[in-house]
Amino acid sequence: MDNPPARGLPPLPNVSIDLDSGRLTGASSGYAKRFAELRGVFADDEALTALIEERPEAVAYEVSEWRRSDEAGDLAFGTTVLQPVMVGREFNMTRGHLHRVADRTEMYLGLAGEGALVLTGPDGPSRVVALSRGSVAYVPPWTRHRAVNVGSTEFAFLFCYPADAGQDYDAVERGGGLPIMIVSDGQGGWRAETRSRHLRGAGTVSGRDTGRD
Ligand code: PA5
Ligand code: NI
Image (cartoon, rainbow, N blue to C red; front, side, top):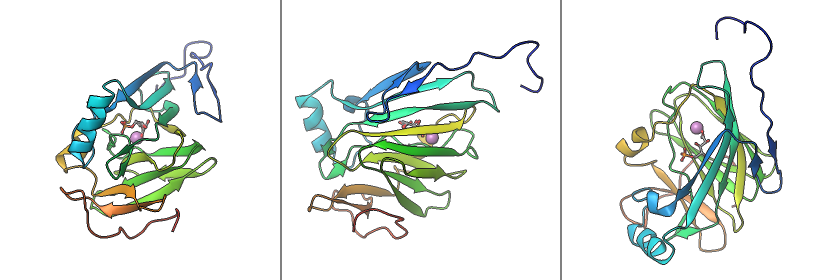
């Protein structure tokens, strides 16, 4: 896209977003991610297996987006809607990724429900940013990120990122997942814990920006 188009304008989106549900109309692509495809993502394998056995088709989240191309200079944008589901003590969440072009950034805008965005920098430190309707979060370069539904209703957010960013899921898996997990605090709220192989992770993460205390 070094040169202007020969004539006219490129294709423009005909997209609208229902701000109460996060549902997007006019997407150029989208997918639903089922819990059955998320083995290894949640800490509690037994709880995930039980959920899948009970509801094999259960959807964890849906992504709808619009993009014109995958080229540098273009933007991709869309919405993600996460279902309110617990997997053991852990809240439903996206797989999480590093952008394949790792210095690419992203912004999130909360639309509906209550969520959290887990951010983990290249050298390890994590932050958790609470997201609800109208709140904005920023994913810096070289930052692994994952969205979590910490509420009891659907959590929906808008995302926007450079169209050439891509998603590298192996980068997260190679590192054994993100180093923290978002779990129930046992009192109707949530907290971040250091992720360990075991369900009872130890320690509260420092550097939490916002959220209920
Ligand atoms: O680019 C983003 O961060 C989002 O569009 C996510 O891809 C989306 O929320 C789904 O998450 P993931 O790609 O980690 O499964
Ligand atoms: Ni991203």
